Amino acid sequence: MQRTFVSLTLLRRMLPPCAFVALLFFARPASAALGGDATSIGAGQTHLLASARIERADTHTMHELQAATGTKVREYLGNDGQVFAVAWQGPFRPDLRKLLGAYYETYLQAAGPRAARGPVNLRLPGLVIHMSGHQRAFYGRAYLTDRVPEGLSTDEIR
Amino acid sequence: MHGRRLRRAGLACTSAALLGLGAACGSTNPGPRSNTVAPPADNVAEVSVDYGPPELTGYLNGLFATVTVCVPGTSDCQAIDHVVVDTGSSGLRLLGSVLTLSLPTWTDDSGVAVAECNQFLGGFIWGPLRSADLSIAGEQASNLAIQVIDESTYPVPSDCTGFDQSTAEALGANGILGVGSFLQDCGLACAVRLGARSVNPGVYYACSSTTAGGCQAVAVPVAKQLSNPVLFFSQDNNGAIIELPAIPAEGAPSVTGSLVFGIGTRANNALDSATVIRLDDFGNFLTQYPTNGSPSSAFIDSGSNAIYFLDSGTTRIPTCSDPFSDFYCPGSTLALSARNQDASGLVTVNVSFNIANARALFAHQNNWAFDNVGGPSTAPQSGTTNLDAYFDWGLPFHFGRNVFTAIEGQTTPVGTGPFVAF
Image 1 (cartoon, rainbow over the protein chains, first blue to last red):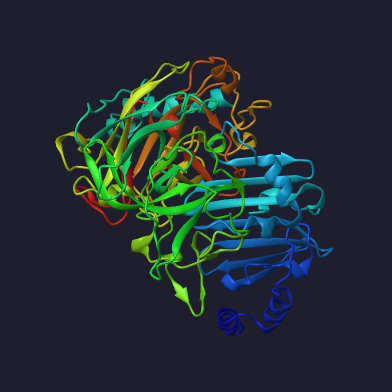
Image 2 (cartoon, rainbow over the protein chains, first blue to last red):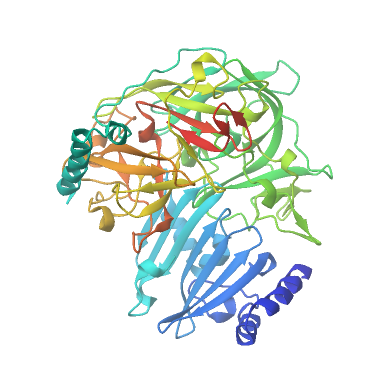
């Protein structure tokens, strides 16, 4: 709790007032992520929060949380308020159960033992998951193919 | 497209030679590779690329060593074969199901038993830390923290997530010998406490009970974390070299090579003419593919079993159909070039490599070692840089090369680690 308080105080100095208000609203802990709504942004990650920012585009809104451990998590919301993509990069992988939300079990079932020992590239019905890197340098992204807004290239989800 | 790229690379090299730019061209490594593999010695362990543990289903491009672990300070020891030699991680991890020794518990500063959720790309391995003496070749490390891969001692915490690789079947080996460029598997991020709450990213856990929820994420001082065992050798402790001979294009059933400890500490581990590529804080350098292409973050990883790079859309190399869709299946073998660049941008070296049709390679059912198997990494290349899509120089890169990995902060004749050299 103390950690969150300190972070938010710092953020208040760094961010324009409107962004800070938005962060307070969106950073409320909840219980879902990919496929969830705005209240799920940052779920389970807020105690690690060191900084955050929000980027708005015509097609979507991107929320970026930078954990104190150095890992950056980005969550992409469509204009319908639903999270259609998540991406992460940094020395530690985020909690996949919290980040993939309802799709975590789908991921586990598809992940099974494979001949490849390297990056993960899963193309499932409605869901694409990529993960690469190595210990201390992780990168990954997951998106719901049917919910990526028209006009947004999936290359931009990163 | 590939032909054009190849011709272009060839032309550049020929014109360089014509202009007398021998050095520029000489940094490329064309044609069959050749290297000298060190014979057995005190600091040289024999390693092999083979089928893997006979009771399992076969391991593609697995580099294996045998390690001996003992109850600390005793002669109660066990040799464990088919432990994967992994320069992509740090620390020794052994399957609890093959370990017959009763090793002492490893505790945190409060005397509570420590367990670890070790993260791999999309997976994890879980189990308690134990204390052991390690010997490999003539090198020894005493009272080392190792991870015993075992879910029966403590239940997996709910925040230890991803695909569970804690079984023999999922691991495909009897353990992992992490001899990468990092001192510890986690480092400062797992050691720092902020206020009442640790910022531990869910790697180390203090286990006060064997019931569900009995393990809680905890900060562990760096000195008590799982560390690269090479550090604790009394000599040859600044890094290691993987030396594998060149192999035929159709692969080989089994290949023998050497894991040499120390860099520039003896006559048998000198850097000689190897190019030194310094690593950034994340253990990465840069690779351009093709050689004039956009740079990707890159690393060398003996624990990755193919050269994983870019994606089909960018490389124009088709992936195989299922069940081999993780690999590239070009119509004929492609001779490719990439340019490696260190984090400073001052050192560049061109590397040639082949990518063959993986399905055709795997049709050689007795072969388990291949120097020309590749596959897609992740994000497609867009824009001028692609620093979040890793170029993963896996085990195929090592055949016919001696590949050095210097540990961060350790001194070598060419400066302090971390770096790779080949």
